[in-house]
Amino acid sequence: MNDFAVNRQTFDEVMVPVFSPAPFVPVRGQGSRVWDSEGRDYVDFTGGIAVTALGHAHPELVRVLREQGETLWHVSNAYTNEPVLRLAKRLESLTFADRAFFANSGAEANEAALKLARRVAIERHGPEKIEIVSFKQSFHGRTFFTVSVGGQPKYAEGFGPVPAGIQHLPYNDIEAARAAIGPKTCAVIVEPIQGEGGVIPADPAFLRALREACDAHGALLIFDEVQTGVGRTGFFYAYMDTGVTPDILTTAKALGNGFPIGAMLTTHDIAAHFKAGVHGTTYGGNPLGAAIADKVVELVSEPALLEGVKRRGALITAKLGELNQRFNLFKAVRGKGLLIGAELTAAYEGRAKDFVNAAAAQGVMLLIAGPNVLRFAPSLVMPEADLNEGFARLTKAIEAVVGATAEAPAR
Figure 1 (cartoon, rainbow, N blue to C red):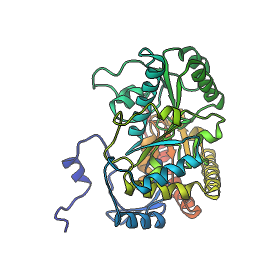
Figure 2: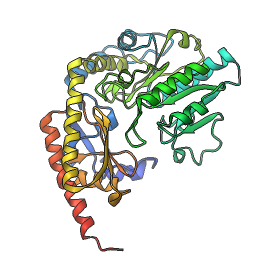
Figure 3: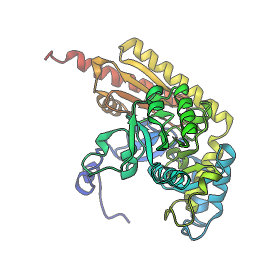
Figure 4: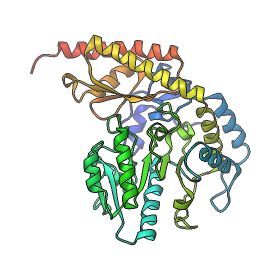
C-alpha cells in the first residue's frame, strides 16, 4: 500500500534539482497517448526523447517483461545469460559488428567506447596517442568523461579540470577535421545527426572525410547513435544510409523502449584490447533488459516498420511546412525519419520553450533541441490519427503564442 500522496510540488521538496519537469505528472501511457494525474490526455511527440520507439505499453514488450520477470532478472557479470547472448547475436547479424558490450545508458556506452579507443591506441601505437576529436554542440552523455568530450561547455563547467587531449571542431567542417586529425589522434566521435545540438544532419561527405582521416592516421571512428539508432531515421542505424562504417557504434535510448540498456558495438580486433577486468558494469546486460531489447530489435528491424518511419517523417515534415506557410515560424526544418527539428525564425528566437509550454496546455508533449529548435521524436509506429490530432492541437498552441506575441506592447 502506498502511504505517500504525491504531486508535482513533491518533486521540488524531495528531488535533487537537476531537472525542471513540466507542471503535470504523467501516470499512464498507451501507444502514442499519455494521461496525467488529473486525467488529461496528451499526444506524445517526444517518445521519451527518442526512447519509446514502439510507443507506451507495447503488448509484445509487456509480455516479454512479464515472462522474463518471472524467470530471471539478474545474475551479475560473474555469469552470462541467454537473453544477452541472443541480443548480441541479433545486433551483430544486423550490423558491421561482431562484438558487443552492454551497459545501462548511452553515456555508459560512450564511456566504454572512449576508454576502448584510448586503450587500443596506446597498446598499438604508444602512450602519446590519446587525443580525441569531437564536435561543437555535440552531446555524448553526463559522465565526467563524456560531458568533457561533448561539445557544449556549459555541461562541463563548475566541475574542475576536464580530461586532457580533447578537441572540439566545427560540425560539418571538412577542412577543420582534416587539419586536426593527426598522428596523436586516437578517436573521432561523431553523431550522424546532432540531436541535442539542434537536429543537424551530418553531410555524408563530412563523414567520409572523417573515415579517410581516421584511416590515414590509425584512429578509430566512433558513431554515437544513442539518439539516431534503432530505427529512428528510417534505417536501423543511421550509418547504414551514409556510405560510412564506423569502428565503434554506441546505442541506447530506443534499444530498451524505456527499460535502461545501452550497448557498444565493435569488431573482434578492436574488442580484443578489452581483457577481463579492464572494464565492467554491475547491471549491464542483465537478463531482463536484454530480453526486452531483443524483442525491440526484432520488431524495429522489420523492413515494413522502417518504411513506415520514413512515411511518418515525410508527413510530419509536410505538416510543419503547412504551419510555416500560415505562421512564418521556421527558418529551417531538418532531420531524417522521425528525428525532426524545426528552427524558429529570428522573430521567435530563444522561445522554443514557450511553444512547448503552450503545446502542453493544448494536450501535446513536445521537445526542444536548444532554445531555438522544436524537436519531434515520436513513436516509430505512431498511428496517423494520433499524428493528425497532435498537429490539430499544436496548431492551437501556435495560435496562442503567435497571438500573444502580436498583442505584446513594443519595448
